[in-house]
Length: 149
Image: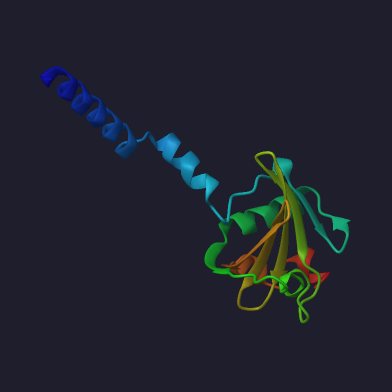
């Protein structure tokens, strides 16, 4: 009777040790699955504004500004209010970023205001909205955005 209890205690201790002390790569992978504002890479992104595709340095600049933005809050979308987030009444032309997250195609609609940046993330049939703070994106002096907004 003592041997099975001893073996069970050792197995439970090993499992507890593995779960509480995961390697950094495993923890980063788990966290990235639930991250709302994920990092974009310029290799698998298509950035458009008003139907015109951004290329080269302008595209890299917009993606870097987006990656450096600070997450403020998640905006809750209630059923029936989707169009209010997709097409706000008092905003100009949004930046549209098409990218891949794993195997999923993701579309980000970036609406720029003076005091914040609203992002609507579309994937599959889901919508998620959140707000960012990015002085670089909010500046109207950015040549790429200034021409269209």
